[in-house]
Amino acid sequence: MAREPREGGRGGRDREREGDELVDKLVTINRVAKVVKGGRRFAFAALVVVGDQKGRVGYGAGKAREVPEAIRKATERAKRGMIRVPMKEGRTLHHDVAGHFGAGKVVLRSAEAGTGIIAGGPMRAVFESLGINDVVAKSLGTRNPHNMVKATFDALSNCASPRSVANRRGKKVAEIFGKRDQAASAGEGVDA
Image (cartoon, rainbow, N blue to C red):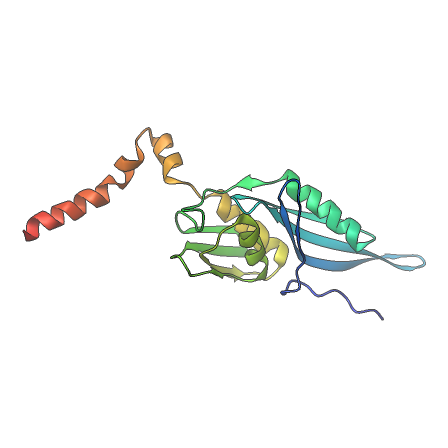
């Protein structure tokens, strides 16, 4: 009997495209079987994450009789469903955020420069494709790669930049951060 492909792990496939500069990462391949009158019919299900490493990322799942065709289908779906994520200084998230999908729950935290990507397998692929260099992520609940990726995308879709929050409130960015500055200057005045 042939060995089944391993799920997740570090054996993921990276491929960089020249024209559109997209990086696609293979998260997992799963062999599935359909039982028919003559025996079993095997197919392959692939989960792929695609990103431009500049703030856009998407995921897709594809299923076909052959592995390359399943990967191609998943990549096409991932390109169609890309989202833009605001990043702080081009390396981390603006704020901590949580997301969930089904039994998958994730917590994403912004990190200092030089921290690196501290995250489990499927989430690591998302961050590398997105272009985030410093983040701490924890998966709570399921270890199913599909649910982990979908929970990570749920969290990333809830991220907001200070500029977008200021526009939504009809204020300036300085006014949103102004309370901290006023409290710091008031504290200095008391000591003097």
